[in-house]
Image 1: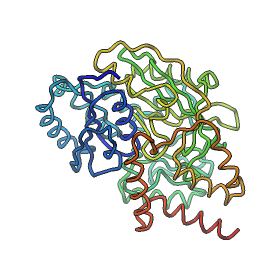
Image 2 (image 1 turned 60 degrees about the vertical axis):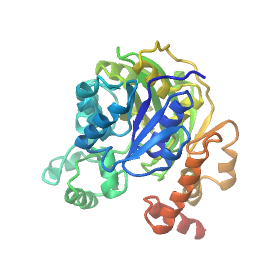
Image 3 (image 1 turned 180 degrees about the vertical axis):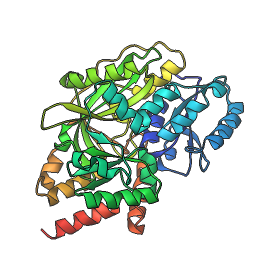
Image 4 (image 1 turned 120 degrees about the horizontal axis):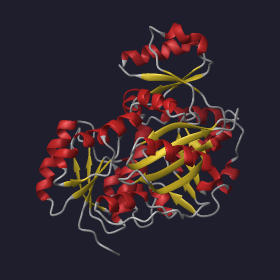
Length: 413
């Protein structure tokens, strides 16, 4: 195995961080991790050293201080991998100051803000003619002005999902009436959050398709990887718990849409785009684009590499100036699973009388890739299970309420 002189610094934890650490570490790269608090990702044997620094992933001045101190310990320039929307924006603000010591493969701040700031994002989709759900940006004062345009139910979606999740513990709310919408908006207003009101694109989880990849410095797609969602948790508006790799030729219209759109922005870097095929017109609607690596609580970013499309490594290689070949071939039909969350998804589906436990087990036949479990790197999985169960028992896990409802439903059958 080749060894590379340039280390990598991962800013953040979760399954996202674990995936980046494993992808790079398995390829002979020294990986360091900066986290706000200790997380199971840092227990990976591929993490050479980690540093717990409160606020480092979200506070720009703190990150700047840490990186300026860390640069003095580097024998070679390090490649930065910011994992969250906040941290990638913070890194983009420091590009000029850090360029003598760090290598960064991300777009400029204006492009990143177009993708991350949802109001700008959806206006950009409209301007570029990209199919997407009907979306309204409003507040309590102007609700009456568009009330007649809204068809309930609707999804109340945050402009900054990670901040919303931290404050309210969920990805959004579904409102079935004007009164319910007003009640949720008042809660959101008290928490000083910005949201949008979006139509719910009809269709099952299997109508969701995701395209992951990397655009080089010339805004050319070097690698693209497609997967289809099979299950999700929570059942509505949750994260993928099971996906299958598919030929990108199966969703060529969505591929053309995302390549044309990101190229028009002169995008550079790792991305993850989510589409949902609208059962009313059979058109794939673009729901969101992550301008970074992904996998916070769902199918991690080691899944593409397990299929032969190592997006993380390609980003690293371009950062250090290595020639990167266009990667079109990867293995299809591989199942990617987050076992714990997929079990919850299974139980919720059983409660709805849509899937038996036997059918769920049968669906796992064939070649699989597990999100946290890895035979060559066991400790993160053991720590994850310990922490997950501990949080569930202590009532501190945001999945707990969903899980209780599922158990009540199952026991009532």
